[in-house]
Length: 320
Image (cartoon, rainbow, N blue to C red; front, side, top):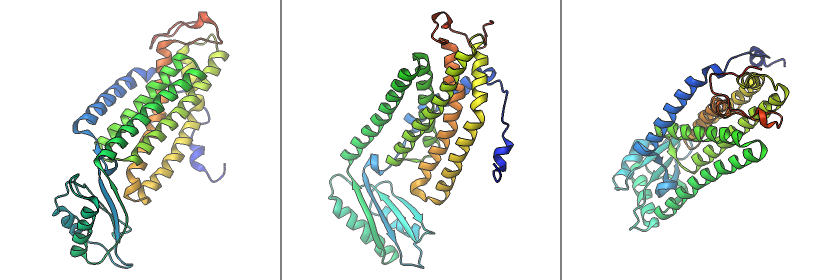
């Protein structure tokens, strides 16, 4: 296409030996997954107000004026409401304030105290979008969010099992778990706030990863029927090379959109965008170096013939 010079840079056909690097990729993935799991438990997730309980309010100054964010933070800190977060938006003309609400104090009273303290520190401001989440509700939201993630993985496994074969389903689920765990690791590493927005981001990553995996598996199944005498490792390399350009263009386009969202979407969408961008990258990686190598280890049927279902060990190719 004219006007899209970057697409022309990508080769139409590649002949890369992806399987040759599968062992190294497996070591890398294992280390990253273990590190991510350790990070989830210690230091743990930076739970947002949705899952920890508390209040969120937005305040703004009249047009042409800016907020002194430090004064706002100090004013709320002096009330002893635990962790206080102040994020400026619109060039600090507005701000989002997050704070915890004690269980033994009426929520409306705490919100009124915060508003009074802020007004005394920075003058008259307009308050909007005040929302309060109790600790009991936040605990239920956290449980529901984790259950939603688990249910998504199980349903994706069932879909792949129904559409393909069990060994394809095993590779797909391994890739999904790999992607989800690494996204959690990024959240811990960058200390991103784990909120309902982040749950939505992870669910989107699951959908994207599964879509990419289905594309690879569809072409792999087609090639297995077409090249019945070709060693499995060579069929996998051929399949990945055939869909490589399409995968890069799709992923790069999505990352560009999310990068713009991260830069211009404000603090509320920054973590969401970063998690999605990272998820797209690891989702593409897992389709090549997690799902496909598991099929290589497990073995597949070719064209429905039972005598072709012999497992092929990684690094060894059967000869016709």
